[in-house]
Image (cartoon, rainbow, N blue to C red; front, side, top):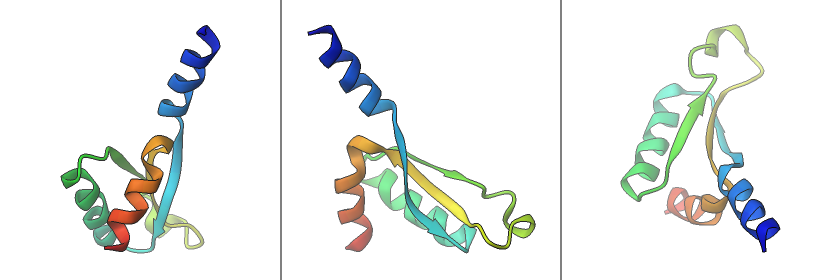
Length: 75
């Protein structure tokens, strides 16, 4: 029973990249859309856009919210 609790807790704490944006404004708009729907998210690499031309701004969420977040962003 303990292992199930630990497994559930780890799944909730695990973050995944939901989307990668080339534009910080677009990334923030997506983040706000998720926030308005009650899904916690955060941006990574938003301050290094000019330093890494191959990367982008990563929108990250908790893995437990992935299915709902994908649905929200496609609406």
